[in-house]
Image (cartoon, rainbow, N blue to C red):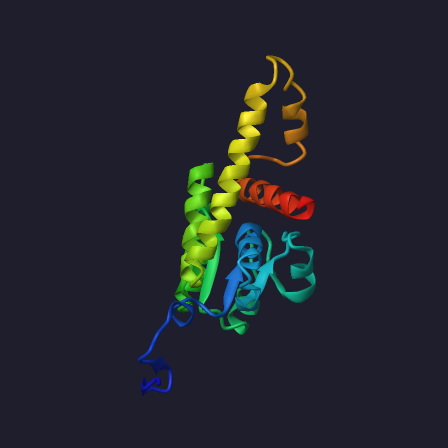
Length: 190
């Protein structure tokens, strides 16, 4: 039974109702993570740079590039949360905040910080346990890759940086994507 204070504030709250229900993702990693968590229904807008999962480009309106956004389009979606990344999106965040939109901007710059950000997003949408399970799988996969690399003879991994250049490793998004690709490849191999 759920009584209410008014029409918008339920007295009986759970993790799923406390978290944001209408999310705009200004970067790819939060979109991909919410899909991995099974929370894609919460996403109402995405970055035009989103490529994973592929279906997100078909299902969700594109409302931003990386350094610019269509503020009017975002406002029309009536988000209760916008996820962004770093000071590079500070102007977008400021414009949305001036319109009363809650904005969470992450600033992950290392693999550990990426894992922290992913956990925070999972917790915000009531999926902390599932997020931890996925993060544990990612961590185990990364440790297995590191262990396999350590077993290679010195000099045998000289081609690895060439392969890594295929994905620019300069943004946190790419690290999150690499970790999720490891999970995706494991899932398809199983």
